Image (cartoon, rainbow, N blue to C red):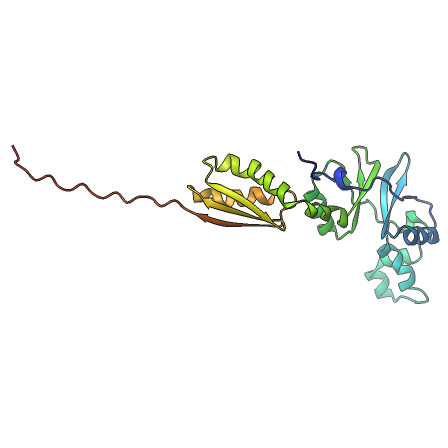
Length: 228
């Protein structure tokens, strides 16, 4: 381990702005404005996360202000209309909250954000208690890893076990890994690519490999001489 972020707790923000169920609408808006954030975890008890209030949860208040929704609109958008009349975090929040464990891999957090289309994730312990928050920017920080560190890990974790003969080299530029040299077994190339992409900070993987030429064995000339 060379200090490179590997899990969520390596990159998360430990100081978190959170609210309780009874937090009023205007206080929520004020906190988001003050701290420059787009969502707030909602806590109860000893800090257990029970929901999240995001900007999207607040917008129906403005979107439906002064309007008289039709019966069809009431049937099609019941959640938005309910939030338009909400005044506390408990009424506004999305629950259950989309959270991630502190020990989760960065790739797991990134996939969760992409699938659930959220910008920030509350980070919780095994009991669901809030311990931090991780944002998209936090996860992207891994791509600031120096090329030399990436190359060193790829040599150790990929080249050494797959190509112990010492014929394969590695160079890294702007996070792009290139394997160079000679490879004896081309079946190992896709394996090397998969393993290299799993290294933190790798942007892409390429190959500049050649296969050692196999000498052609010529048939022995026939023996000419007496048969006995």
